[in-house]
Image (cartoon, rainbow, N blue to C red; front, side):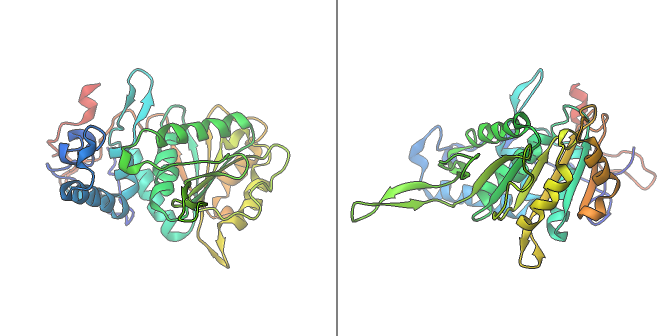
Length: 324
């Protein structure tokens, strides 16, 4: 079994104390659980516990010798996913997801994007919805996210996953939203009455825009985007011109600060496959890094573990694959 490497190319090893999802595993303690007991709101215990969780979401979490990126900590502990046969549940720690979130940290640091070719039902959309868009919407001031596709059904599907996930996080992580994502954008704002009888807009101002590039490729003109997902690139006729038209939305002057996420599903390549193939074959020309999610990537969750010098697995934490 090949070792999983971290963003610095060092082998990933974990110890017996490895627990990347303490909130999902043990639950929110009673003194911080405002959903069950609203009276805890404002207490010092409630405040301290949530301050600690926000710190982990922003700065990452060390456990069992591994650093869990803040985005992945948020995904594992405060987001639920729906899978066939299991229904809604918290995600498991999976090696390919860990690779993906380490890659997100890398491309954010290097000011690049990602192009992914994935097998069906590997959960990548859930990771991007929650670990990129849901996360940015809450933890990045005035965050702007763009969702686009060649067909409305694909853009709507991704956006609906975002709305679904945004509504089931704990109260401390919920945001009031208004607006139309297809027009002015879905914004994390609300109106509050002022002292003179009028209303002022409050909230963090994070916004999600949804567009299709069916008739035009310059659909984000004038917007700044922290992230933009190009959904189902293999069925995206205007993928390359649309990507090139959107590049200006990632710039702060002459500096690129936003990230593009382009992905396609194997077996779902239609008239847009030429553009996706061009980008996949020449990712450097588009400032993208490849991430391939093969059909075997998620068969054995949590397989990244400790090995000795000879490569023998010495990890004695029960692997989740034993439950299969």
